[in-house]
Image 1 (cartoon, helix red, strand yellow):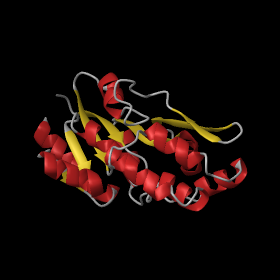
Image 2: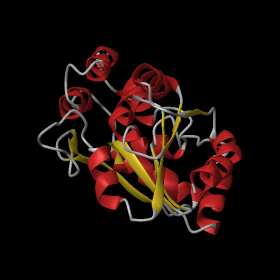
Image 3: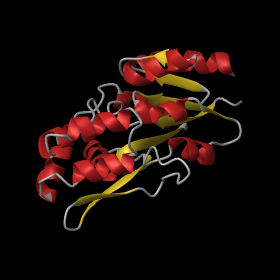
Image 4: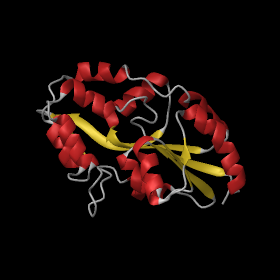
Length: 216
């Protein structure tokens, strides 16, 4: 293992301070969105089924939705963390089971250029989703983060995963170093997976260099 890192980062509730997808649904979708989302979190329906039900009930135009996306706040430590990552020529990659539209909007508003993978949100006669990174054999998530990690990992690089929720369970198990909070931390404890707790990216930046030194 080398000292270079590929850092896979969840977006909703990790880079963004709150889950943008849930906030969007709470503001614009029908009343049943929380029940639908809970079914997804319990594994009762796929991301595609969950998205189809929620998005079809949304009544909002593209301009208003874009303004909503631009107003979302990011983790207060992420900018400094990203500077550290880029100065050392590590590779950051965002893996999200959310939507490309708000990730693009947030990255653009912050002036960040980061490779990312997400579901595509688009409008024809209603809001709809496409999942170009779906694993057809599983389909629990719209974006198969584990598959992307396998494809994007490089020899001699340590893999780091940073996340907080249900879509992070599988990918966390396949990385060398895991930072977890909320549901992901609970899952790691339950499954006996080694992880490092964090509140924000300031915490991660304080811990990660020392962890890497021990690994290499």
